[in-house]
Image 1 (cartoon, rainbow, N blue to C red):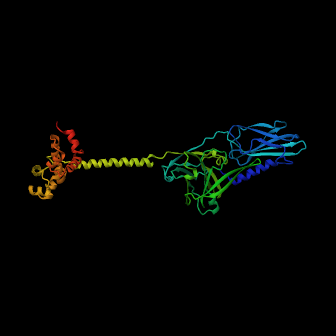
Image 2 (image 1 turned 90 degrees about the vertical axis):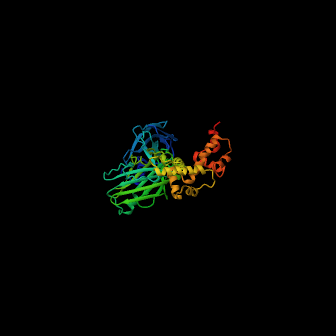
Image 3 (image 1 turned 30 degrees about the vertical axis):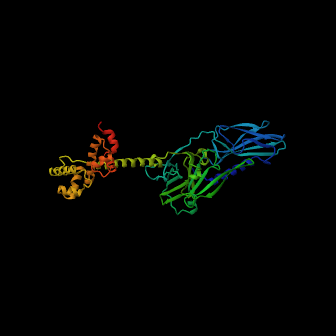
Length: 487
C-alpha cells in the first residue's frame, strides 16, 4: 500500500474546501440551517444514516445535501448528492449499504440552504464514521518469552507482512512476560544500505499501534498507544487527540520521546531488525489477556520514498483504525517456566533424592554378608573365629578392635577390612549390631528393665542401646518389646 499520511491530510483539507465552495454565492457558518443529526464524532454501525436539519428561517426555498467520503485504496475523495429538500421536515434517510466503512477521519456532510433572496447559507458536519460492514479481525498468538524469539530461526514462523515487492519480505513476532510486551520485526531487503540520505533513513522504520482496552474505535483515541521506531534516531510516542468544534473534526497528533528498551540492527544489502520492549506499566496494573494491535512498516522504495505496509492489510484509512486491528492473544505461560511449579518440582525431586540417599545409607549400615561363593575358605574361617570371640566377650564394656586384634592374632587393619568385607560394617558398628541382636532376644524373652538389658549386653547405657535400635531397626527398644515380647 503506497500511501503518504501528509498527502492524505492535504487531500482531506482540499476536499472540504471544494465542498464549501461548490455553487456558493455567499456563505455563512451559522444562521438559518444547523445540523441535528448526524453530529461530528458519531459512529453508525447500521447501513443507514438519518440526516436531520433545523431550519430557523421562513424564507428557505430549498436545502441541498452533499457528502464527501473515500473509497477503498483510493486517495481521491468522492463527492455525492444526497438529495434536495424543499419543505419541512428537513430530514432524509441516507442508505449507506453500498458505502465502504468510513474510518480514521470519517466523512463530511454539507447542507446548502438557498433563501428566497438568492442568498446561500452553509452548514456542515465532519468526522462522521460508518462501521456497518463486518470486519474479520486477525488473531495473533503472543507467546511467553523472556526475550523476543529470533524470527530468523526456522522454528519461529512469526507473522508475515504482505509487501508489494517480491524481492522484499518481512516477519513480525510478539512476545510477553511479567515485565514487558515485546515486538520484533525482521525485514529482508537486498536493496537496503545505511548510507542512504539521513532523512530518508530516519523516516523509515516501524509503527507500533496498540489498543489496550480493545475499544475498537474508528480512529485513534487518547487511550491508543502509538510508538514509532525509526531506523535512525530514538523511538518516540504519538498521542492522538480528537478535536470537535463547530461541525469540524480534527485528529491532533503530538509526539514525545520514550526511553523503552529497543534495538535496531542494520544489515547492509540484506535488511534490518527492529525490536521494542513496552513496559507492563504502560498497560496498567497488568498486561491484558487480549489487546488490539497493528504494525506498519515504513519501507524505502527504489526512489528512496517511504511506503507503508500494514501487518493486518486494509486500506490507508483502515490501517490506522483500531476497529480493523488484529487481536494479540496472550498464550499461557509454559508450566515449566512457572516459578511456583518449578519450586514444587525441585522440592519433590530433592525429596525423592534425599529418600533414595537415606535408603542407600541405611542399607549400607546393615550387615551385608557375602555368599559362600564370594568368600574364600580362609576368610570364612577367620570371620567365624572373630565372631565367636565377640560372642564370648560381648558384655565387656572395654571391648575394642585392639583387644580383638590381640585375641585373634590379626593386625588391626586386616581385622577391620575382613569384618567390613563380610558384613559391610566397620568393627565398631558390627560390635554394636551384635549387641543389639542380643538385646532383641532379651527384650523378647524377659521382663528386665531396658537399663539392665543394656548393661548385660555390653552397652554403655540404655541411651546407647536405643540409638542402635533406631539405627539398625528404625524402632526403639520399648516399641520392639511391645510388638515382639513373648507372653
